[in-house]
Image 1 (cartoon, rainbow, N blue to C red):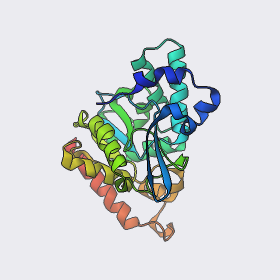
Image 2: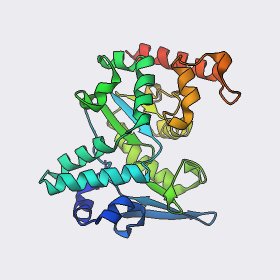
Image 3: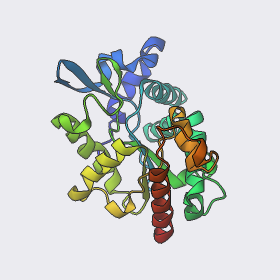
Image 4: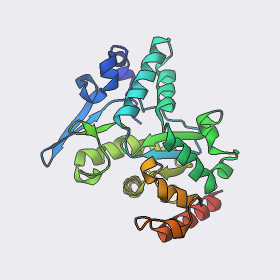
Length: 262
């Protein structure tokens, strides 16, 4: 399992404030490049290496964005400047930068509603960002930040499977990471992430039965679907863009799967 923090720790120590804000511009952080349809795709290092081997649940996003990468780099630099070991600074940076703000609030509510807190033996998944942090591991389908023409990659244009390099990043980094967490529940955030995890299953890197797919993405832009999923908005008040039946089916499937594993 690849851990690049030691390779980049001295570079992180030397980053200036502008470089910490815009890691996509820092050539010393570049890990790989590709091009498709005239678009430039770049994989950039940020400290998301740490793997919590005690985790009972793994939360998988698409890829860290610029703000998340910036937060992780700043936290790692602070840790290194305080004299933390590479392992401790890497771990602190990853937890600090993972799923902050309203997205975290939505994610906690949905996880609690489908039985994840009960599976973990905690009162609420809120504790995963506090005293029960040892129970959770945060990662991304593409572990390190991906930028397309200098902007955050959203999972499309290009899709992950159109580039051999991105498929390799998926298998070599996240696939190997998840292989050592095979007894944890794996929660993909959104259908694109679920598809990428399914790609890893035939390679023996992810056990398909542990993939708990179907939660609405916790982004604030997904507010109506989240509200319905949580029972906060009735079906007769939904806009045409929200498919209530699909959400009902997903919820029933997730609850059943979590209960069966428990």
